Amino acid sequence: MSNLQGRPKGAKGGRDVRAPRHDDMRLCTFEVRTHLGRHQRLGAVITEGIVDLNFACSWYLARHGESRPQAVAGAVLPHSMLQFLQGGETSRSYAVRTLEAFGAQVRDRPQGINEETLVYSPDQVRLLAPLPNPTSLRDFFAFEDHVRMGFEKRGEPMPQEWYEIPVYYKSGHQNIIGTDQDVLWPSFTEKFDYELELAAVIGREGRNIPAEKASDYVAGYTVMNDFSARDIQRKEMKVRLGPAKGKDWCTALGPVLVTPDEIGDPYNLRMTARINGETWSEGNSRAMYWKFEQMIEFLSKDDTILPGDVIGSGTIGSGCGLELNRWVQPGDVMELEIDKIGILRNRVVRKSK
Image (cartoon, rainbow, N blue to C red; front, side, top):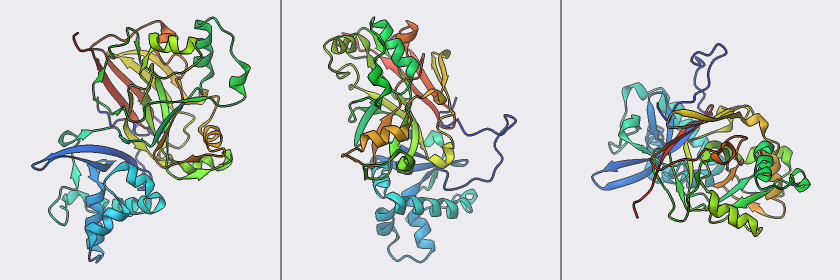
């Protein structure tokens, strides 16, 4: 099953036959091997494969008479996702123009101005996390069913304060993996867990943003697996500090970053988790009590959000082993799927002592 699945379906369940809109993008970070080593590149997933956006932009600019196409492409459409997000509307507009021009020529498989490969088949590259180096990672508790179940398992009442502000914790934004990458079972836990989440990625800098304008600051959405060491987390929570070590050792994002135009309504997405092919968790993002717009408003109060910040939704109800009393084991393959985004797949590996 391809990690790049998850395109919108038509009204009758068949393939969407609309003409592609190039402002609707499915962005990725991919690794390609060359005789000079491995390189990470910014890509766009299209029907024909994965377009190297930076090299394709150079090709586009050269066709339009730019005398320094590589230098200009490096400035307006960089080769990394974080730099692309920091480029804001300029980078986005050049990506749109490049894909529109390239789409008319893609069947001819054109090469770059220095014979670079412009479009790869999925088996020629390795997908990484779409944003391997976020500027921050903050995870909210947006799904009431999950939060309530957690308090019940600790024998505590649901706090009224949860309904008053969208609460979050900071996680390890330097410990990010992508799809089809193994996740190491930490040496300090015996209770490894997955958590099925939707994540939004910030694409504009802002401060004191009202909720009604907050959606303008979202660059796109991706699937998030918030791995958890439940026994460590339980100890942290008992002393009213954390989550910390129980969470921040690793988080998975992927397989792609889907722009808001392509997603449509982010609050009507089917969310599923499978372990070794067996469905453990199912739900829909419509169950979010706190919306991303409210999270952004709260985060940005007298504080600045930046391009490349990642905001997690928190776990959907029944979206983890803790709620189900079922536990992931070494060697298990976790597949988290969200409509219109795709499948984030990771295997958990435990090193022998």
